[in-house]
Amino acid sequence: MTAVALALGGLVGFSGTPAAADPPGGTLRNVYSDGQFCNSYGSEGVRTGLWSWYYCEYRQYGPNAPGFYFLWTFTY
Image (cartoon, rainbow, N blue to C red; front, side):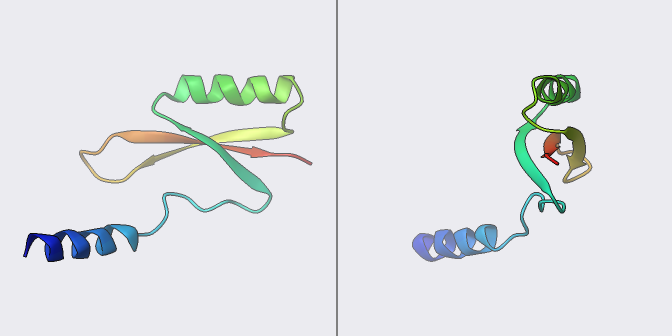
């Protein structure tokens, strides 16, 4: 019974929607728990020419869940 429950739990967890989908032309570089660090890393990438621009998208997946910052970069 336990093995069946674990197998079903794995299938349900695996079939969930992805955390974030790539915006057109964007690349997900990393996920951070701190917005200031996300913006600092994004602006450093622009300054050094790694990407043209970036944005940090904040997402929280529940009222009591921690929020995360997704660093999206764009190169044109």
